[in-house]
Length: 599
Image (cartoon, rainbow, N blue to C red; front, side):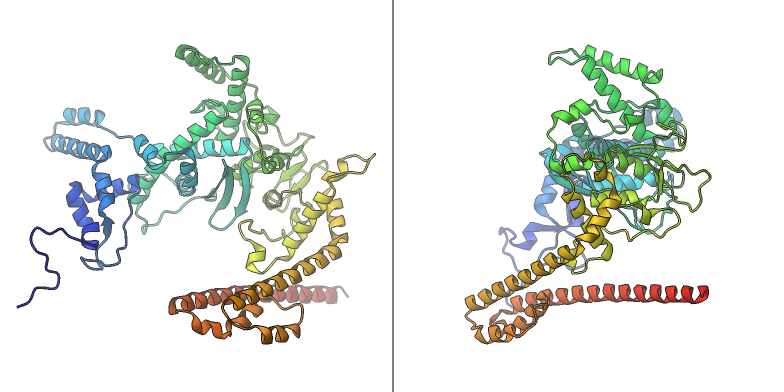
């Protein structure tokens, strides 16, 4: 008999995948922990299953890299989990013996663990933490909206902590004007902020009753949430100290009871910085002095000695501290978008979202309810956000617009005309700022209108001598001038598109020449084509070239996948155009029907 296929002589070490990868059961045996503790350790330490090229134990196993398992083995958190597990056995034993006093005593002294060292280990620098902040923010915003349910181990304390972290993050982003994009979708509201050069995108669910399903493992989600809460706390601490604001904030209990947390945070920022300006801290100041200042601030807030109903409280965040920080051009533009705009929110609009985004772009905002900075009857209000067809009392000194107007102005970075967004009208399409229309190959009509308004606003920045700047804020003038320059803009766009097509053709010909293929016949055939030929058609004709036969199988497959992607994009664009034609035809038929009824 010959040797078996996988024969290994005694004393020889394993090699290849058998040595580098272990299954989940093998990893649990190495670590000597339970399955639930192993999952927690993997989530906290950032260890995930791997896919080896050759699965030694079979396809039905989950594999981990041996280095990742040894990384967990030497972590102090592992010993803490073993200690907690042994302590829980003591509690269980006391309950089994019906020794209630001992069980209560053991429960009050139960050991706990912190994730501070784990976060410092996984994120050596602050930029690393900011890069990985998308999922933590989305998860914390999700749990901030969930109801507390005991059977799923979702505690009230954890929900409140998530809401606190969300409001602290939103308050910093709003007061430092770091918000860049907002998009309202069916899933929720997408936000994008730019902090220290890092773009952070997160999803906040709509403020409505959430229904929990049974097909979600909340134990795993709560483990992730535990790590994300600690990470977000560290990030908020660093951000607040970067603008010389104490953390954690001490909120006005009256406003906190009224659920006006964002407004309470803005009041805290102002009061905190006012105290710092009055008593500048010396580098060698003692700890007792700092504690005394904090206690004085707490006492002032508890006695309601802070300025009540201050209109500019939401607009000003640590002005002197933020002025010391160098602001880029984008931040300065965002800061003055809603400048001199006083906006009031009706009861039916998404109050929490608008309280976040309007001050982030320099606006002053109030709402209907206790603790609001100013009332609805204030004559200085310029806009009122409403979302119902009829109003009880209409003020002629202000404009009534739908909430979409705020989000569209933010994405366009200009004050859009309010006529399309007035009450009772169907607003224009809400375009996503995360989609590149040029790359997709389809530019909606309203996107073209917004570009014309942006061009008109840029061309009107320099006023003529002897004229005031009042006309710059008049969006109707911008709209009219944008339509006057429409033909020139369209001609320039057509010329630019023709130049891009010719440039792409030239690059394709150079590639063909480098591959050793003569393109003389192709040049003669392309001279007879029309100038309006698009780039995909040129690439399709060059795809029929014999140079494809010289490609390897892998490159041919990659080239075929690229072609399929382009074809799918073209089909999506055609579907959008067909939908647009159908809508226009339906609108025309409806107009004809109305005219016939009138006549």
